[in-house]
Length: 116
Image 1 (tube, rainbow, N blue to C red):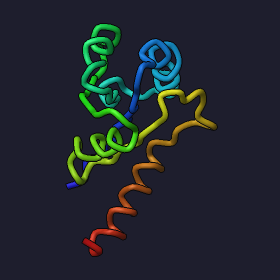
Image 2: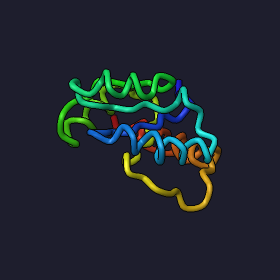
Image 3: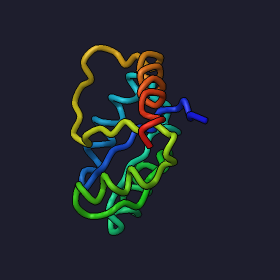
Image 4: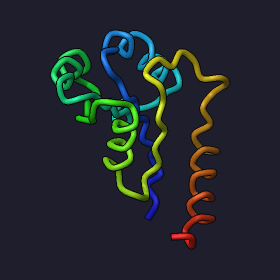
């Protein structure tokens, strides 16, 4: 079964204040639910982020962006859809059409289901 909720993932290192004042406000502006936002940080930054952003899901990742992206992929089930955005994201051009994105993701899943 396909999980229709998109998981919005932010890999971050040393940018807790920036994410709080910019990136998360951007997602809020586009009506992304906080429960669907996951912030991945290195083990030594977990407490800093949890203290500053208690209403968000702070996930222990790894040091280094490639290892962090691997942690993001491994954190979710295979049938979940992930949107990974840069922690320094300043804008999203246009609006996020979640319905279109979900339809696209479902079609991609169907098209690729038989290639496994």
